[in-house]
Image (cartoon, rainbow, N blue to C red; front, side):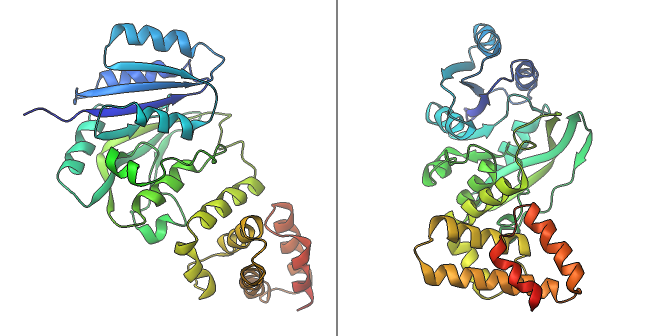
Length: 309
């Protein structure tokens, strides 16, 4: 029986010093029927030289060099050029343990309702130790991502979505993709015997995002999938904390500002949650809290009226 091919998609932007570690982790896999598609996303380092060297060593490794368009574009490009029915993203500065593909594929092959399978995560580099992941629940996923970027999924399920969102160049594109993949049903399973080794570095794309921009990214996700959030927002669900309440308001203000009724309702629900928190404090404590939120980009001056309530 022919074992199914797995396409490992590897976007790379100036990760030439690490990419050989990622490739070597593939060469050590207990499951051998894979292809690796490296997409050079406009790197200015030695990625081109190293990728070509490995292509000449192993015919399973393929290489494309593109202009810099972001990790979402690179992943979508790789998937479009893949030959397999099963896709595993692997960032060029990360690694997987030797049975990662075998263990994840085994689960996916025998569970039709499962949309993505992933391993545990262990940090290495500037920090170390296990990254504890919450158990999967879609109700929780829409508020916090517990699925690492290296989840194995079917290509046909990727085709049913819009792929990785190429507008999300700053980050959270993997979180938004898992929401798109799972919003119409299906399960995600974590395999404890598989492990992604996530490289921690002093400087990274996610570490470079300030809080204001993080709120903007979450606001975009909530706007794109507002059918998942609107019911919680306007029922004043306790599941929705002040951060997401603000992000929903920000999403409406940014993308639907001409819908004055929805904008007013979004502002009212945020104001309500603000008051629920602030009413427990005196005037000076409220002032201090509001100023802190204002500095972090979670508040604008139009809400300072809550000080007097």
